[in-house]
Image 1 (cartoon, rainbow, N blue to C red):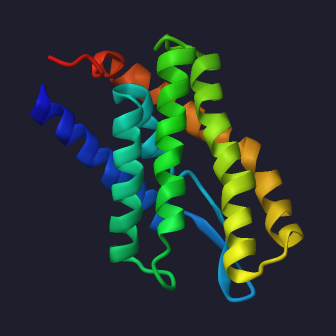
Image 2 (cartoon, rainbow, N blue to C red):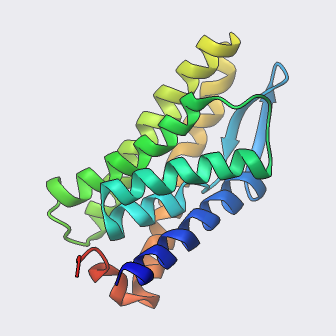
Length: 175
């Protein structure tokens, strides 16, 4: 089971890097990437829901570091690695402890929407404002518009994955 788990987590890490770095729409604000619209966190959420908060943390952190190495955008900022790791921890913790790992549309949606909201609507704008002096309004308008669509799309994809790979619901079991 350990090799299978590692293989799944590796695939989810690569998926996160590819979706975040190469399949996202970016909006530059004052010469810095102010908004990234896409489903780049999908692999983090899948890892967190299927395997737990620690694995979500690892996939988030490793994907951010590898993503920077593959496609750097300015200097490395560990703050954003922590935000990526936090997405996995929060999603996995909500799903495991609040929803008792019961797969439903509500549990998956809430487990994705809460960390996405914390990261996309609070932490990342705060960090961009603090680190680069970006004003909040140009960042928040596209984020607020994209947020419900991004969450809905990620939930739909995860629901599709669950139908295609029903065994993913039992991958968290440690053997």
